[in-house]
Image 1: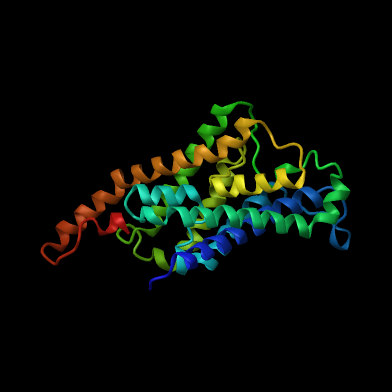
Image 2: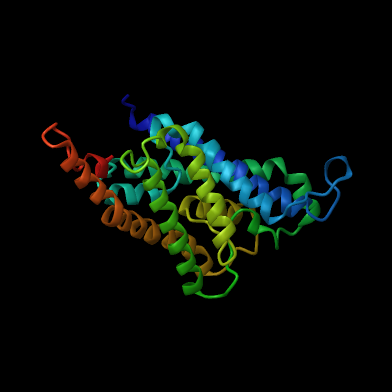
Length: 272
């Protein structure tokens, strides 16, 4: 099936918006209701466990929304890495990334609107809850968070390719969305402490820009803004090229040799 640029743009926008609605939404639940009575007089339990599970399911819901039309990149770093490795037309990069950033911004705005009354009760000056929207480092400076984001996003990108590679995982199409959700959960559980595991420039910068416009004051310095943008892009490129070098291309060459003269394009798997 072929879709127009407008349809792909809308799919990425809606998919990323849903990602942020569930992802930022679960953080809002933990932060805003974590220490005061919530619905039915109960407090929200689970804390970081809820957050890692919530973000994983958020990715799954976004994939369900956008997967058929756009492939559900939902992440500029993924889009750029797919283009850099020949899997995705470079001409589509602008409308995919535009959809991702706009969707992330809108998702953050909707979460704030839903929780607005409670938010003003917990943080009336909007001076200490910007972390609901975006990530913040555990250690000051550029390098610690940058390394964390590179490693986390390299894992994300490499595993996305491994899951979607028909030569590596023939049944991947049937359960790929759930598998990617599990990858996001695993990254959060294993590498979430150093810089909040944004692993997605749109996921972090779109809501952070909304928070700025909404009047939040604790938005961090330039390093806090740049690390979740630059780190994921570098990490996704590294993860994609490592996968192709170590796994993807050897599998394609082995498949070509096995198929002999049956007309299989040895680069099909790398491009698709």
